Image 1 (cartoon, helix red, strand yellow):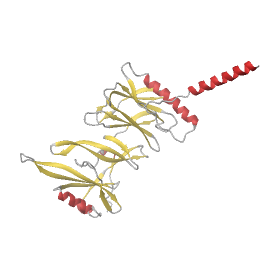
Image 2 (spheres, one colour):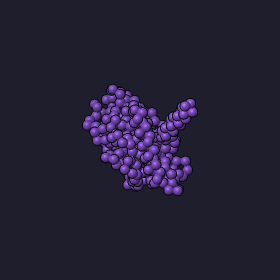
Image 3 (cartoon, rainbow, N blue to C red):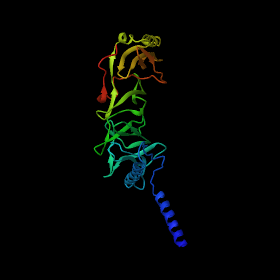
Length: 313
């Protein structure tokens, strides 16, 4: 009887150990998983299992010379089912991954064609991020170009991956809005590449990004704000000539101006500069930036821009 009790006890301990070892989780710094909050232990376990299943679906698409990078898994359309994205390719150097973006859900895995402008993306940076919004989750990747890293944003609609129409580098979420950087050759009349932030917000009604576009205002309108005259005098002291003043509905004003610089061959070169100020109440203050080269447009992504109906004054 005593021997029988010992055998039962050993069997129970073995069973308990096996159950604990079958709890699946992914712990790889190059394939980060999404964060989940306020969920029951049952739903967390379900997510880990789905995480593993979807990762395996993508791993099945790799070849002997390819690997899976930047695996991201979440319930992107908030419908109770998880989906996954990842880059399949071969890494070159520290950051560069020539390859293809893939998508996986409970129906299988498929390639995702992504574009930067009209050019199909076939090289990526070794970086990605899941962005949480109230009504959905987004995934952000970055293309790898010699001149920059354009952001590639995707969401899931009706079970399918959809690229969000947005052009710019380094999408960043701040407390109340998003920043995306325009990569452009506009430092002067001779050229010169610049990076300037533009401001976006997530529109829950259309489930897409909108840009804070601008309207042009006059210097007289601008000077109705406390501190504006000081900014204009600063530009004048630099020898600058105002090109235009742009007001955005998120209380941002960009003042574009030019400096004529004479070079050794006596040619005059127009250098493009700007100041960006923030409106708070009836006052403006300059937003300090390391570089202020280039010229601001009314919108960086005109197809998604919303313009103010009028100036605040």
